[in-house]
Image (tube, rainbow, N blue to C red):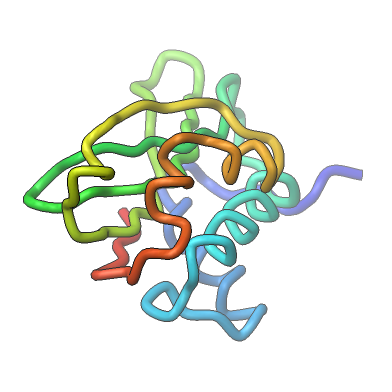
Length: 130
């Protein structure tokens, strides 16, 4: 049986509810917890009438920091693509200059990326959900 559904425009609220049910807050997530939460949200909660529903990680320099993001791409027929992004910010360093993106379906997919390796032991400067 399919899991709960949500309207794409309210994806952020649906994800925050999932975190609350788990006793988690965006501003306290580790990167691994964030990846797991987005994977669980993607697996267990469906966007209403979506013909596109994919999860990917993206990384690269932006806004004077290095960003590692878990992004859920959703689209309903005839509508523009919508994104829900959980973004972790880190200090820029010579080792954190590359960029890229890749689809994921597991924690291992995300943690085996060049982007994750660049931030695996780094202190998180900030977190955003948009």
